[in-house]
Image 1 (tube, rainbow, N blue to C red):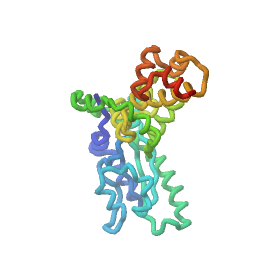
Image 2: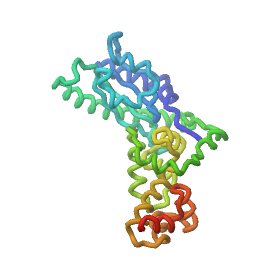
Image 3: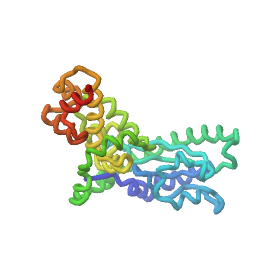
Image 4: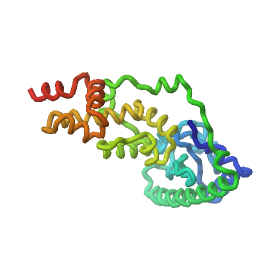
Amino acid sequence: MEEFDLQSLLSSSDKLLIHLLQAYAQTNDIAIFVLNNEDHLQAGIFGKLTEKSELTRINKARDLSKLSISKYKYGMEYADAPLRVAIINQRVGKICVAQDIVKNTDPSNIIVIQKLQQQVEYLKYLFESVSKLIIKEKGIGDFIIKYSLDVDEAIDDLDNNESGALKRIRHLSTSNESIIAAIEFIDSNLDKRLTLDQVSGKVYLSDYYFSKLFKRETGLSFSVYLNARKIQKAMILLKESDDSINEISDALGFTRLSYFSQTFKKYTGYAPTKYRIDGKE
């Protein structure tokens, strides 16, 4: 298991990135901060923050996963952009900009939003360009944390509650952009034999980050969610189509009919044939 160490990158080369972000924030009278893939604040907020500033409150927070939908709670306008490391083709976090506002409904806020969106795109380009030079100089190995597989964690990830997965996905809700994109990709490719690295690659996350984030946001492991969606679609096809069970199994990317039948029973409590007969009675 390994992950990219964003804090090490920020602090590398005599804190070059931190100094650049701090200077830009002070010059443009805005706040700038960096979040990792789990929406945890890295290295604090750059820019001048007065004691009365609402941004001072979030500077003490760790998990900012709900920031985009609760920005008015903090009395501010906000924009962000994903950060990617080209050499490993992965999203490693996001850069964020914010500015205090007086009223949530002030028409001038539109100008503030437009300005912040322009600034965050420039900062994304600046951050990624400087990061590329730093990584080229230091080597990617300086910024990769390797973990040994924790046995207890591995066992915990083996979610055996397949029967509850179908109910959970009907009420699934997440605001995380990477997980939303991953779910959309999965749901559009249920006919394929998707793997964890294929889906994590689509949203530019490492296998390790994606697996942890997916479980946190959905309450299900990647494999359980994938099978639950396939079985959910199989249930519809068994009731509404005349396709054979073997054809349905093939259409949903199962390698063997026996594995499809076994999986279907785990998630529904019925064998496919029994489910079809009962559903048409």
